[in-house]
Image (cartoon, rainbow, N blue to C red; front, side, top):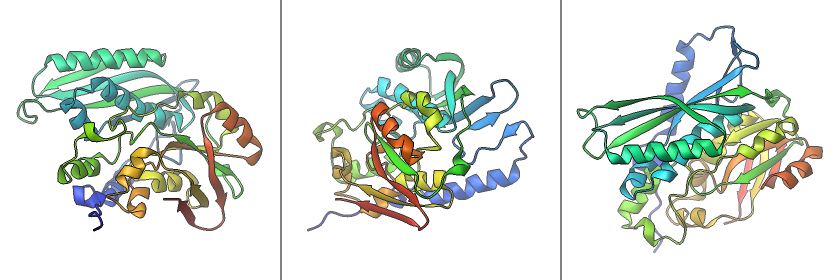
Length: 314
């Protein structure tokens, strides 16, 4: 008998509803002339200094619940940094400074440890934790609950020429370290409903999100970048290609994706998970070999004039 097939909506998350709210915010906000337009929306570029400033904000999401439960605070710190760092990279920026916000029931030793890990991991990247805020709110959080958000500031190294992406350009995927920090409401539902313990799995379910710092050195060969986050691989492709089509073939799936595909369809996985790739690069064909020799990536396909055609060998 086939396993039950879950959807992201089953876990209470509606990506479409999120997109609608984002569109509403965009319609309400007036951007001054010193904001440089950036089509992918991963981060905002402020033309108020030379070089311009790049900034973004993000959190870990419900993966944090498992990291708290299982004592994986270092991975939580890495996830918080990565979700912000990779977004800034996607607009051609180099992250430098980090600010955190902790919302807690009461300050405890676990929060001291988390900040220690956060500072250590930032230092490895040449970054600094320059400010933050911690709020004790027992009326909102239960005794063992807490949440954290990150705010990252960097400088613009090169505004990526996303508008020049055209048919024939090559799509390169950089491998992910695991599920990263998206789709966890669905993953947690599968674990609960199927009575699965993370310790039973043959891979590290809570591996920290990969930080793609090496991409910064290759900006001059890249037309566009997509951090594969909410909405999965499909949404990331649409976000960077902006109406253009792509022919993509995923030839091999990592162990964590093979596991989750026991419980979700390939179509649902495409719009929820990273399918094994945490960042996508779009480049001219003549630059592809150079990028592949300097980055741990593989060619997934190319931009074309048709629609989105994604083949998964599963």
